[in-house]
Length: 98
Image 1 (tube, rainbow, N blue to C red):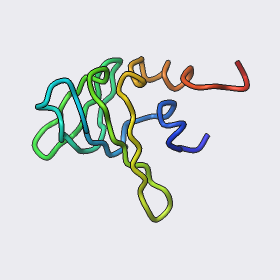
Image 2: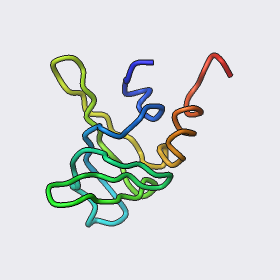
Image 3: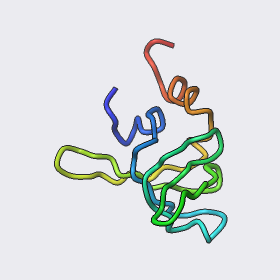
Image 4: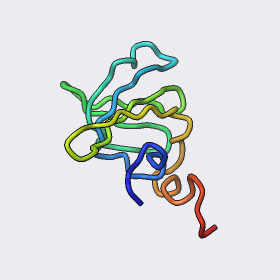
């Protein structure tokens, strides 16, 4: 399945570039970098100086998806990403096989 804005929650997030665009904790807004770690409830975002652990449920993320020679920005509510990565990629969204 290709990586599109609609299928982003079903894909591996590690390696994608992300920015926190809103959060319940205002100190998290503006954190940007590459996703280097994902757990059930957090994303590890490698910034300039360290890895920030951002709670998924309390934030809105903007991911950069490569589209050939350009990049498309996709905004995702973190609550849609709260799950173990393996479970999220298996069960999120509609499937003709279920």
